[in-house]
Length: 353
Image 1 (tube, rainbow, N blue to C red):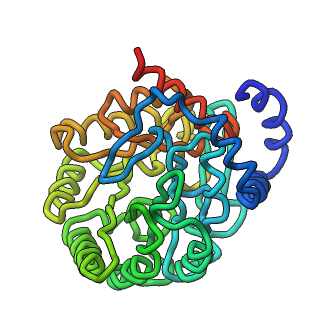
Image 2: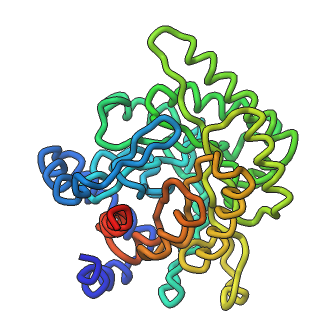
């Protein structure tokens, strides 16, 4: 399937503006999501053999190790169709408390020779309240074929000193609908957001959200939601150590490594487009960060590995470095809609060897 996509469909899609091509794919998957019998039939076709073991992480069971990273399904329109493509989980968003259009277009740029993308989307989304209302009409936690993560960010117009209140607004609106939640403090496309990875700001944010999570779990019929932090690949190892210490202090359930990078390795040194770089140029750095975190935590902190997964081998490298799960997005652009199924099958075969 990947070969046919790369030879035929990708050529047609790559003639389109990248964001327009993305919107067409979202529309196609939303149609599939509206046809549950067809989606279930496709999910049975892409599912791993019964001998393959599910992945257990932060109290959840994942039918396979491959997820759809945040950024694709920003507004919870297509995730019910994700299992049909072979995904073992989906992370929607990034969502902000306030609806926002994101940065000016054009804001997505492909680099086919390098199998890379630069984006400066800027958390364009319909806002936490609108997406919560949509999720209320969709399958709920405990009634889904695959786990659903919800990725939370800061609204652009909210000052940094009010960021905690902004995240808490989104948490209160969306926690009931999530299998797990992610605090995204690492996108390079919202001014000042990455400052939330630092010292006291991170402690304040994690302290407030974990306290809200405990309070919520104390309510009748509620359960605690796993909370993860998504970090940048551009942190130094000393900065990563500080982040890990704060994660341990507040008992977070896991970490996502990594977001897109502001670095411009190799030929990208001459590229003037602002934004986060993803795809093959990020492969090595993301794996290095995963390996460092795994060693620093003695493998006790679950890691979702993201960044430069372009084939089963690079996915396997993330797991070998210490990741529990992986997520893809840019690889999907270059390899096609059944990329997750291909990777999950290859990783499943590794279990059976």
